[in-house]
Amino acid sequence: MKLSTILYSSAIILALVVGVGVYQQAKKHELKPGQVGDGVAGPLGMVWIPGGEFLMGNSSVKSQKNEQPAHRVYIDGFWIDQFHVTNNDFSKFVRETGYVTTAERKPSWESLSVQLPAGTPRPSDSVLVPGALVFVGTEKPVSLADYSRWWRYVPGANWRHPSGPDSSIEDRGDHPVVQVSYEDARAYARWAGKRLPSEAEWEYAARGGFDQATYAWGNIFKPADKAMGNTWNDAVAVFPVQAPKVLPGTLPVGTFPANGYNLYDMAGNAWQWVSDWYRADAFSRQAAAATVTINPPGPGESFDPAGLRVDAPKRVIRGGSFLCSEAYCEGYRVSARQGQDPYSSSSNVGFRLGVSAVE
Image (tube, rainbow, N blue to C red; front, side):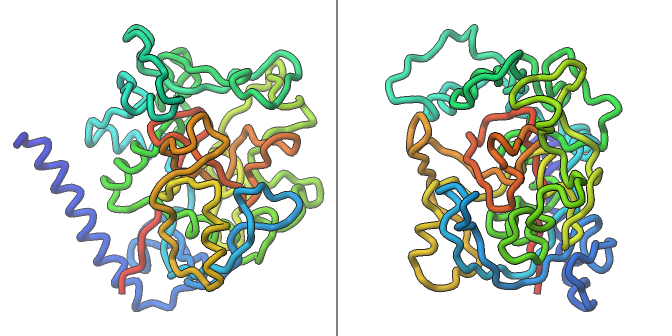
């Protein structure tokens, strides 16, 4: 075994061991909802979310079918990152491990083909080049039924170059890292001694103690005409028209106010990977039990009748991004959910991590 492999494995084990000790010690303290860990009373930079029961999903007129119906769920207390994982955070991970993200590798036809209709012919190897999805916008209003009008697969796009090879994250160290796949997020989590939150944990934390509020801060999108998250500004340009000199993108984490649990950017800025497989009917199946669901781990497989292939593997993303608009997806609503290819990377998807409380 190579020395680098041994050191990397040892680092993960040490992080886990040290982490367990920290979280056990935190149990001796009187933890308050939204308390930020300082490395003694809880893991550094993570927020304590107390256990409790809540209504997950939504049945309002704004809700999509995949969010329905609202149903009762109980979640044990856990810790979650106060902020998105940033470019600075991810840079440290890559420096210490030499990790290469999926967008920096040649795409695997095996992982691509399962997202396409059965029988789709394999493309030439010259097409299978490293890259990622980038929002390019349009010059004029278009039908919102075809997202390929404003997204492009750009060779050379990755977490270091989120909009393509000519872009950079220089001076953007405190922005959410994007162009990271579900697999990249899991690799980072293993290194950090953490894990991705479940979808139920994420929504419970995002609600910030508000019961069935539309947004992470309440029911009014812009209270007192004040923006509460980094979302598409319809007053500047109709989605997906790219206004001259106004390039949509991420902002530094923590730019907008925290929610009731002291968490930042739970709406807008960048979508966030969670651990669950995506099923469009997950909530209706869960609600059919007619009892409170305790710590739901999510479904065992994917199901998306709106996709190119109903059984294509997809993981859930939550929270919306800078591209979410009142006129389009409204993904920043706290119950909004989507499915995404776990090997795909795009310029508006990042993640944050969680840790279980240890008794």
